[in-house]
Length: 261
Image (cartoon, rainbow, N blue to C red; front, side, top):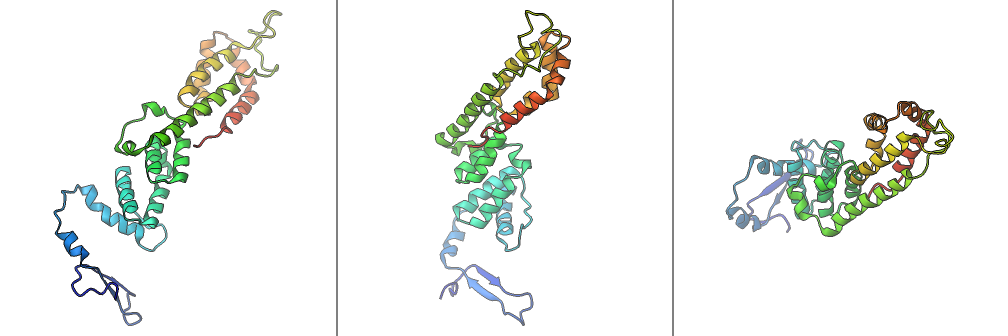
């Protein structure tokens, strides 16, 4: 009979707290564990020693169990254990935790590497969208990156390259005729030229998008202020403000571009 070995070294007990209603059931593990426990054990760090407890917390049959090891190093190690022993429920729960902004928002490239290693496509897509806000070439190294495949890394690079290319195409379009500057376009000769702030915006935006293909930076107040100061026109600030609707529409077009692998 299964789980009834007479020489079992591990016994799991299951049952109601009130044993008068349902007597406890004893699951006696196979003698396999006897040899397993006799093997020399490597020296474990404090983090490693807490992993079994964390894994049990994730397996325990209650919704959204609390997990005590909530740092990224521990979660990465815990996911490795869960996948190794095919504990699907625990792996799914860890993926949900890693998708929280405190992790995917602060270490998107690392989360992407973890997700692709364990074939968690939904988490990989989410992490890839967060990488758009960082310079992935300059992302900090970590052990999880050792396991990323060339294919997965190329998918991420391709996302950045294609999105930057599409965004650049959008900002190379001309603003509407209503976006003019009274100083830049004040003469007959310059009436049909673009305001100087727009030319400066295009140049600086192209530089930023090549690194981080997202609208977050190039439509921020700090960036736009630098554009106005650098363009050399004292009236371009007013022109930029009057072009608010055009800039908002341009931002929406960039935000609508594909943002995941």
